Amino acid sequence: MDEDRARSWLATALDEARAGLREGGVPIGAVLYGADGRLLGRGHNRRVQDGGPSAHAETAAFRDAGRQRSYRGTTMVTTLSPRWYRSGPVRRFGISRVVAGEAETFRGGHGVGVLVLDDPACVALVREFVAARPELWNEDIGQEWGPGP
Figure 1 (tube, helix red, strand yellow):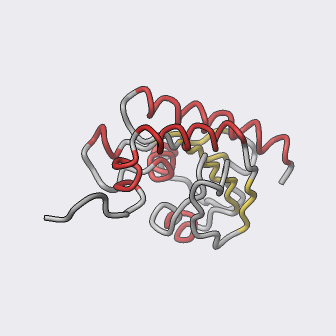
Figure 2 (cartoon, helix red, strand yellow):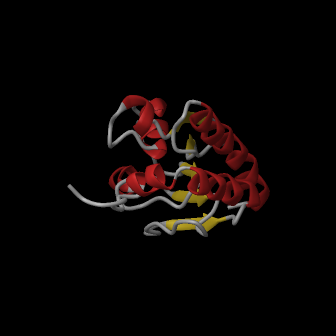
């Protein structure tokens, strides 16, 4: 995949991540592009806003894209390397590639062709969020936080 195009698409996902942060949520954004380069869907993590454990950015972008005849040739672009749950639609529906803004603050499961851009804006956004809201970050990535019941 052409890195300039990947970075251009990442900018849209980063806009989504910032929207989630403005809403008080976890700053992760994702977009799904068609084989022809057309934006099919976009979304951001809404776990906090919706109170739902499955409201991840990749899922939101996938749902926003709606039904497609085929997902061959499509590209999921996400600001953070996706974990197994968030990469489920990639595997299940045959999304061809994933572009991850960064895998420094969190490394997910890279099961298909993944281009990691190590984008400084993505790294900074997540690091600032983790420093400010470590309890919410740990909840989002499935880590326990603080004393148990």
